[in-house]
Every structure is written in structure tokens, then in C-alpha cells.
Image 1 (tube, rainbow, N blue to C red):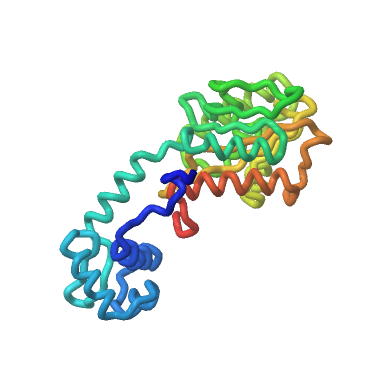
Image 2: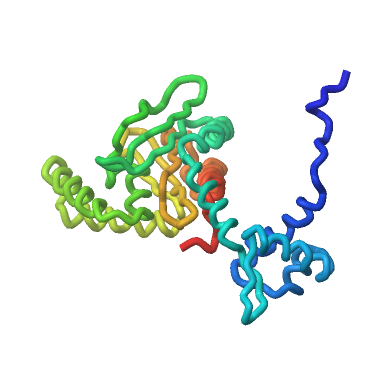
Length: 266
């Protein structure tokens, strides 16, 4: 017996057709002439004009009287802001972390910037022996963890420099390594992270463990989180073009896209 839920739901075709114009406007990113909108939406100009008249009345679209070009209107902005206000990277990241963990069979985590630095807020572990012990609420060092180095490389925050300086001073006192050398290594790690799109450490946070972390951006282009994977050295392929690291970057890009980030964001 067929289930009614499996049947295609009937909608209003004219709304779906008109939405092609709104998508064309959103994609163009600038005020657009009627003929160009009609072409991009795949409909005759006369038909597109009728839809646009209604959209203007609703506030979804506005028309410049001087140039006759169309752009998204105030109601479209209101809808967009309402949608953005509902975006929660921690909630949205759940299925993405699960899929990544299943794909690469390594521990994966989501971190956000907290009061004291990069903070683990979600963790997904594969079945079997646990290589790395982490838990939600863990604050990671900025200079010696993959997650911290990713935040240091991509996050714009006035607190970053002070936290990094304090960490390196303490590390210099306890390790015997000069502060100047630590600073050089840290700066080099930032250059490498920006070039590869991934922060990386090997054995510095946990002996025998590789860590990789990719930044997540929101619709403003600001970094809001990091997705991190941790695995045993020799087991987690550390090449930047390896399958696990490629999957990690793809997961971060997917979450960024769901948060409204585009290639045109700052």
C-alpha cells in the first residue's frame, strides 16, 4: 500500500516560476535590467515583467526609477536576516561531523571561540579504540594545537595576539626554547595554514597524534568555528591532498555554505 507521504506534493507552479527571477536577482548581486533577468530566469521578458510588478508591490523587489534596473527589496532583506538569525553552527554541524567521522574513521570535533580561546563544543568519535581523549568544553592552546593555529590564522580578534604572546612566554620558560624561535615557528605555521586552508600540528599537543583543523566562515566572511580531526601519526594521512584532509576541508566548506558564506564574501 502506497504511503501518501511518498507521493509528490502539489504546489503552485506560478510561485516556483517566479522564484527563478528572485534567484537570478540574488545571483547577479547587483541591479539588473529586465532583459537580463528574463534571460537568466529562462522566460520571456513580458512574462518576467508581470512577476516583477507583483514582487515590487510585495517589497521583494525594488526598481530604480532612473535606470529601470531591478534589485532585491526590503522584504527580501527582512526574510534573509530572519533566516540568518536562526543559523546555529553547533546545531547545523552535527550531521556534517557524523558524516566526516564515518568517512575518515577518525575523531572529529567542532570548536568555537570562547572566553579563554578555542573551545571544543561538539565531538564525534569512531567506533573502536580511542586515539585521542577530548571532551566538550576543552579549551585548546592557540599556538600548539591545530585548532588554535587555525583560529590564529583566520579569526580577526584583538585577543588573539595577547593570548598567543602569553602562551609562548610560558612555553619558552618551561621548554628552554627561545621566545624568538617560538615566534618564528608560530608565524610560519600561520603562513602555512593560510596557504593550505588547514592548520596542522604533529605531536605537539598529544604525543603520537596528528591534528588538522579547517576554518568555518559565516555570511559576513568572518570565521565562526573550526572543524578538527585528530588521528595517530602513521595512521592519519598527513598529506594535504590526502583523502582525509580533502574530506575535512569539504566538510568545513559545506558548513560555511549552510551558514551563508559565499566566494564573494569578504
